[in-house]
Length: 74
Image (cartoon, rainbow, N blue to C red; front, side, top):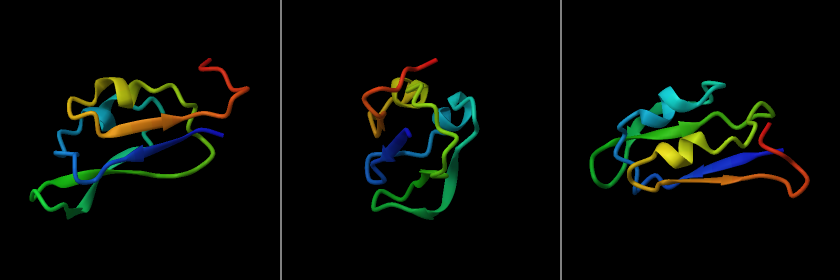
């Protein structure tokens, strides 16, 4: 099972990750961080493939992707 972590304080809510996620598991939340931005949140469920597109596209390096050792990206 894959998962992602979003650093809420680094996220500026640009929304690029929400567009990039092929499973549409990331959305912009309704709460703001200390910088005053609505930050991205992840709908944690079994559908995440760990493709890491969200982490690669994030301009603020606010997303970390975790995959099980035996899991592949395809």
